[in-house]
Length: 83
Image (cartoon, rainbow, N blue to C red; front, side, top):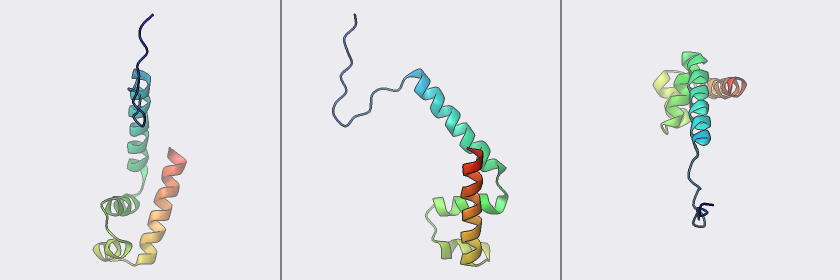
C-alpha cells in the first residue's frame, strides 16, 4: 500500500482529474450562461466586476443608477436560472 499524502493544515489537497473536469465544466456553464444574457445585462455585470460603482456604471452607460440596479438584478437572476 502507498504512503498517505499528508496535507498541511489550512492547505487544500491536490486536485484530482475529476475535480479538474468538474471545474472546467462549471466554468463552461458560467461562460455559456453569460453569453446567453442580453448585452445590456452582461455589460453591467462586467463593469461591476471590474470595480465600478453603480453610479460610475450608470454614468458610463448614460443611464440611471435605478436602471443599472435593475439590469444587475435581472442578470444575476438569469445566471441563476441557467447555471
